[in-house]
Length: 156
Image (cartoon, rainbow, N blue to C red):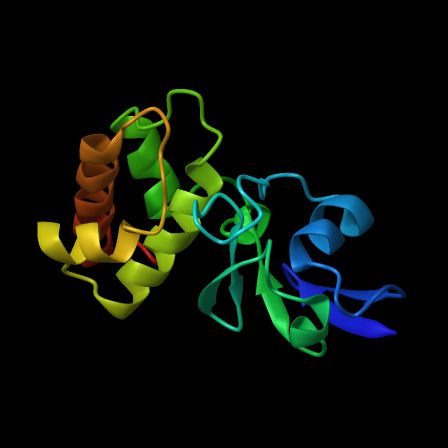
């Protein structure tokens, strides 16, 4: 039995310890905001937080998450009011939207670790997340906007 806490809720999973965390999140727990993109940790669509670290859930075994805390896009904020989510909407980042949960989860770690990122900091931190629609300029603008919101007192 593997026990993980996802978005503050404990889940006991009786399954293969080598199962990717992504499948436990989507198929067993039922949270479908985290997407399957490539299955090889190359695109970032499956990014979640494991004890605050951005990880690719498509290659992270659930055994690594045993006893740990996982945050998915559904747990980033209760009402989609995280500064990144607000900035994403204000800047109109998404087109197809498929990669956006992974983009947001990576950006959240960036802003927690670096509340005043430069363009280069953003490009470096987000380089593992592929946007098939090419909205990179809007992603960068939204991250800057969320950083501004954080400096003005919004919690990240």
